[in-house]
Length: 491
Image (cartoon, rainbow, N blue to C red; front, top):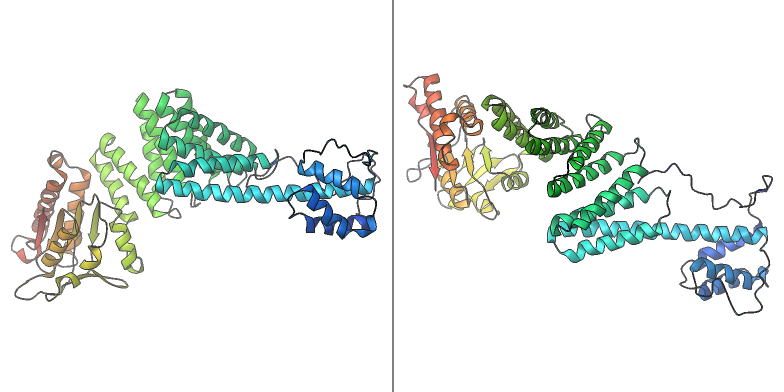
């Protein structure tokens, strides 16, 4: 929640200017406080007044003035005027003034509690909308936040937070419907949120990032240079406000890199592409950030390098990609591996393989906490996958009908949905597998000249050929047991 430099008025403070007033509530006011607590759940002045009068029998004769005050607070139609001639319009005394201020304070608290509930509901609706794309949900989120903002006075600590939330809702709706009014509203309220939030506040960097994202979207629609300049400015400010080692640092850097890359694509200034590349690289080094964010930054870094800085820089970037997504020891559990396989085009499995000749679907990969069976993999929704590399080291031999497990597992991976699979026809040495893998990825990811014209699936075969040829030179041609077993399958 955003802080404000405007202090909230103390609901217990008297509005009189007499500096010598005693701010301690008199006993009758304490009685009214208890009564107000009981009455806050009522819906109209009639009910509230009845509850208060029953709860304060010692204040007989004051019920008319109290009723009028309650009506004014609740906004009843007869709040400002009434035909009841018994109403006393004389100025209320200090005790009554304190009672009214107390009632006003409780009303304010109730409004803010409602605003918080509205914000929570709106955030949930925004999340639902991201999954369903149902415009009814995002429209409702906007309506809820508009009501929350109306309930929150200027200067309140939550005001900036509510403005940021409705800005996100406008931006989400713009991305879905492309209505230009939404992006304008998003930028307007996000700017207000930023202006209300001091630099030292924990939410400031995130609010700046959201504003930058909205400005970037508008730039992509209209090409107005002022928007991209402003986007880069606020995103740089978000990076500067986020300390190194903060979990959000990689995301802030990735967003800034994207804005710099966008400006380069429109203006062609080399300084922007150099800054974008270095910014993506910085994002990959923030190990406290989520691996998915660092992975995204590394992929963007590698892509820029492959197009603008040569294959050697691209290879370095791709090695970082592999390091980020590398699961080892206790990280390589069944559920995690299944999840990551569904998210990435390439999977490299350097683990033991186990075949079951009687029930091939029970053939499995040996992971940290158990076996990942082929029948489990077939239940996954593996879309847009490209390559599975089964680097099975020191695996058990198969039977006479199915000589080697890797061949069987390779066929299973083809059945799962991988169109290209690399495996071994027999067990390979621990020293040989990394040599082949390094050269293979250097070729396929570094985009060597001899592979540029190849189809991605064909390039895997050529890359494996180059890697095996390198291993053969390393170990000598006579050591065919070491370099012969590598094989590529493709459908």
